[in-house]
Amino acid sequence: MIFTKSAKENYMKLAFEQAELAQKQDEVPIGAVVVDSNGAVIGHGYNRRELDQNALKHAEMLAISEACQNLSTWRLEHCSIFVTLEPCPMCSGAIINSRIENVFYAAHDRKAGAAGSVVDLFKVPQFNHHPVVYPGLYEQKSAMLLQNFFRAIRARKKQK
Image 1 (cartoon, one colour):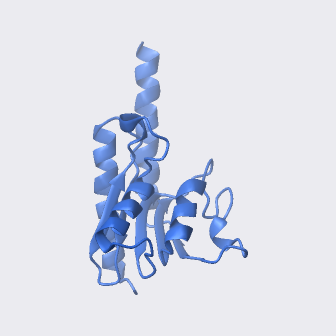
Image 2 (cartoon, rainbow, N blue to C red):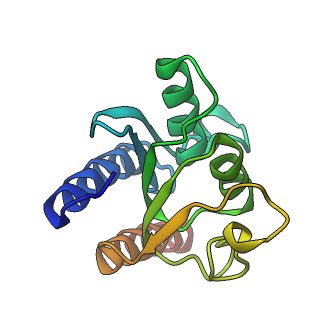
């Protein structure tokens, strides 16, 4: 699917709405949505690692899981994912394994990014699937959201 600029912005805004849900629950504010080839949102998620005490509960993992459930298949070949932070190695692996076609992300993750910042799993030639990656959509907004979240955590710790 070819996305217009406004469509990409709208889907990323939906991912940010998911990130805000995470933040309201003191989770790292990361959100994701999966969109099918008709433009319908078929999966969404936000970080729930602390809430569920489960390392697998990343926004992308939850959005991909819901999309697979909604389509009754693990193959998301003509789907795209919009996420507020560059996917980590685990989430990049899930994107590869689910055959997602396009990955749109906002901020780069210089500590754990696996779509080009630390490593680029999407370009490993031995893997049988290589999604097209579109970085930097609302990068500043995402970076500020994350910086403010961690700044608030440090401030609370200092007060204690």
